[in-house]
Image 1 (tube, rainbow, N blue to C red):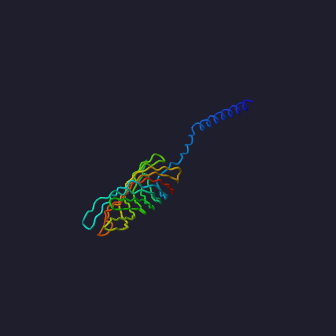
Image 2 (image 1 turned 120 degrees about the vertical axis):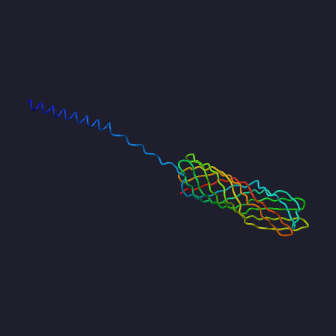
Image 3 (image 1 turned 90 degrees about the vertical axis):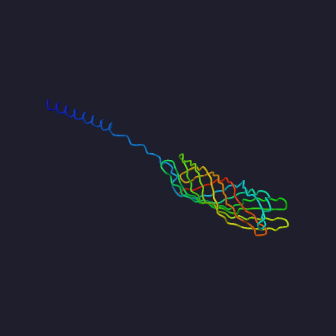
Length: 230
């Protein structure tokens, strides 16, 4: 009888020890780390479309005949619409700075004309493009950036002066562009941007010996764009 009682006491003690050990194991097991949601990154290639308007050109229309300056006959203030596409690449530096390179090309109808004292002049930018580095600062899915670089484009320039002659000239010129913008990522792949640019194609002589002008086509622009990021 004493042997049975001793066996029961031994088994009871072993049970208590096992339960205590199991309780210790359940308490000491560390909780699983929470699964972190992936954060958005601006790094990657993208392609997209854009459209906008040009305005406030400042091309002073002066005429020459040979080496003789005939006077200033007003200002050609180019304005109109354009649309096209862009392609680029961004690289996000840890944690917020973003650098990139973008190239774009647009068909355009940016034009104006002036008439004064028997003189008439007109200018029309038919197409243009830019190649620009971008430097920006990202707040999560929103990027604020500055940009600038090479601009190039094609324009038609016409002029005439009563009693002297007329000309009709086409030029493809390189110049420069400077701007800034903001871009927001709505998903991992879809972004939209609002951008300001100033485009200047420099100076070029248009016309012939009998009548010519020094063209300085330029314009300010506001554009919107939509990009797909790979």
